[in-house]
Image 1 (cartoon, one colour):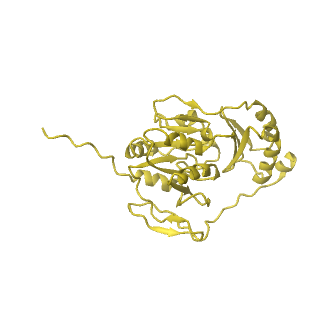
Image 2: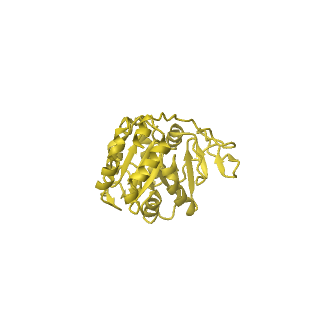
Image 3: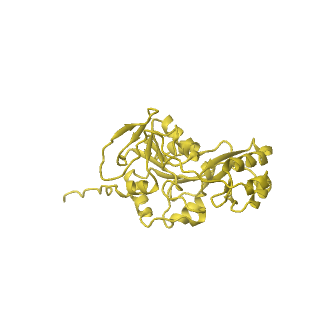
Length: 293
């Protein structure tokens, strides 16, 4: 099976937007221009400004950051740290990053900025920027790493150990994702009761069962300053769908980034550059007015 995988030339396909979807274009407009997809799901032709009563949950890769050839080669736009800081101020601190990356890696990428964050698909969480990281779930991944080792024989396939989860990256591999997924599922069958496989963009994340981006959202929403706000989740791929479902179950907004079409999303925006323009267009937070002496 592995020989077959390494020899197959997987061809990347460019997915077209589903008929009827209106991608968001971000400008100075602050009004909702509503359109409908053919499935009757709302799409936004213009993204409304961030509201002060939102609890904002943002994925990182493919949402705030453009997908790079490898996780370590990702580029951080020069204004992103400042724009995230301002967005956090706009919602009075109720902004968190919810990513498949570890919180340690998130901090390294965005240093010196530290934000509330959930890493490794909810396996770890930091409720406030000054808090330490809390581990929400942990399993012994030694056996999983051993079972997956043969897959690294495929040129371009890399296993990333994150601490509480694993990722099999194949962005640089000329192999078919469906066949690779089938091999990983087969290899990890003995651990199926403990581990779950998530499919992202040219990556398979292996994480403990029972935790997800949904459980991360729920944990944040149970605490101040997130509690009582309208939850909004912005993400780009299938690994974000748990987050989409969590916020919509609470009456919130699930914003799909890019051309993928998730039935769990309620709104769409064109891509990471559009998300960054949306953040950048935020008005400066209101300053308290000094009392007259």
